[in-house]
Image (cartoon, rainbow, N blue to C red; front, side, top):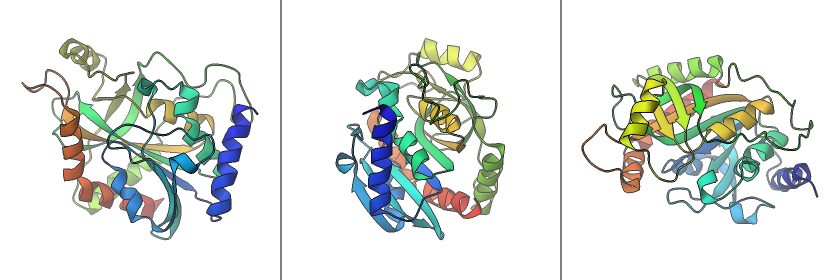
Length: 272
C-alpha cells in the first residue's frame, strides 16, 4: 500500500466510528492535552488503535484522538503529537495532519509549548504565530509527490491565516487576554538551544522557539487547510534567565495557564 492509502485507511477508520465530519482540527502540545477532555460527546480513540498511526512517547503528550463538539461545532482534537527528534521522518510526523485533511478538516489549530526568545514576553504568555522559520533542516514535502494531497510547489506566503489571527485576537479580548503576536522558529531538538543559538535566533527575527508545528503547518497548507498557530511560552529560552532549562518547568507552566488556554480555544472555535 502507498502512503496515501495508509492515510486514507486511518481516515476511514475514524469516519466509521465518528460519522459527524469534523471541520476543525486541533493539535494539542506539551501539557495542553486537557482540552481534549472538554470535547462534548466525544468518540475517543487511543493512537495505538488507529491504523498506521504513530504513538507519541513524550511526557505531556497523552496520545489520543477525540472527535466531538465544542460550541456546537464538530472538532477533532489530537492530545499529543510525534516529533522528528523521536526518530521519525516527517511523513510520519505529519501523518495525523494528512489524516485530518482526508477526514474533512478545513481549519487547523496548532498549539505548542515554546521557549521565549523575545525578552518582552513573560512565562505563561500565549502567542499567536504570525509566521515561522524552518531550521529543522527538513521539509515534509520532500520526496515522491502525490497530487492527491496537493500541488508540488505550494505557496507559503500566508501559512497562518490573517482571518484566524484576527479571530484569536477577538477571542482573547473577550476574556481580557492580550495576545502578543510573533515569529515561531522550529529546530530539530531534542536538546534545548544554547545561549549563543538563542542570540542568533533573536537576531534573525524569532520570538519563540520549539521543536514542532512547522512540518504540520506546511502539510496543512499543502492540503489547503486554513491554519492558526498558538504558542504557550512555557519557559524563557537559554540565556534569558540565570538557570538551566527543565521539561518539568514546561509542564508546570502549561498546567498553570490551563483555564486561560481552554477559554481562548473555546472562544476561537465559537467564532470560526
